[in-house]
Image (cartoon, rainbow, N blue to C red):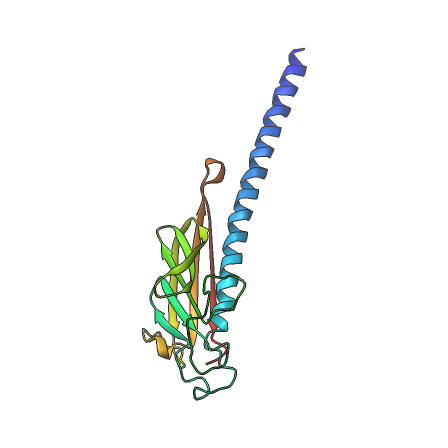
Length: 182
């Protein structure tokens, strides 16, 4: 009986340890997946900033980014080809339509996306638990720039934190995006 009890207690402890490790790994994978998904969404929109289908504005001479700070950016395009980039469109809060203005910014621990910046109307949280967000902007010579109109490449670094299950999980992702239309 004593030997059987020791074996059962050992098996129970091993099961608990294994279950905890599985949950921990699953939580870490969720944080990493969220971070990668958010980064990919931002990369896709930043890459397309400055789109001008008719080249009516001098072949891409309007600024693709209208505001570029360390923790936020606002980009514009001319999707409808009417020569007015970043034009407010009817129903900018309608998520089924393409908007010419898109903004991202960090507010507290939330990354938010707006389809009506700089008023930040129609703003929706994309992900919670952001501990850091950093945008670095580069010009055509690959030199860091603070001038939004000169930006040709954007570097994004995003760190997410989750406390699911009481334990802290972090994931940091980064990417460098060349604006396709510049």
